[in-house]
Image (tube, rainbow, N blue to C red; front, top):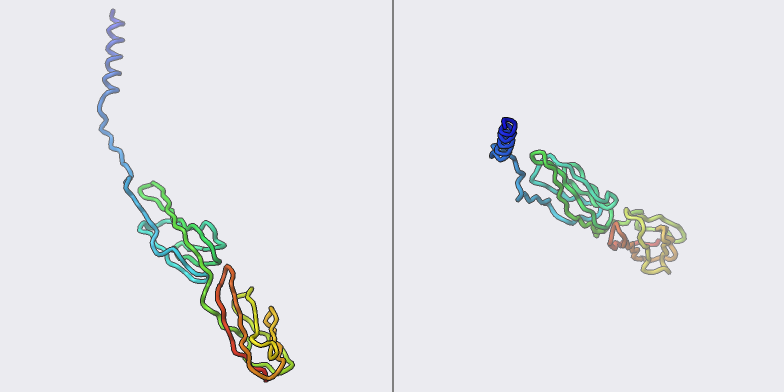
Length: 183
């Protein structure tokens, strides 16, 4: 009988002890935290875009650095046309989070001047160039001056022509012209 009473007392202590109200505090992260990247969503090739986040101390990354790179200060540089996800990862009270935004890189549409000269003697050659490779060269009048696709101009006859360079690729999209005189 003594054993039974002792067993019942032990069971009661365990039961009522397990049902005791806890006074431990539990910290819960803010479930309404909404964090966004600010600063824009578009940049041209060879241009920059400054992104920001209200939470400091995080790290920036690009899903495709061949399209857009990002520094640890959030400065995005357009490399070639396309889309890249820019991600910001930070920590609040020991809880890690990441936010991202898609950045669209567009080809540069600002014409770059043709370099190499604007006169050529009849029967001689000059080399023209442009900062963006991969464009198409044309002459407004091949009976006065011709130009090949590497930018070499041949003076054919006296006169003036317009040399046109057109770029339409993942890095640039523009047309630029230069007046050329054959002497």
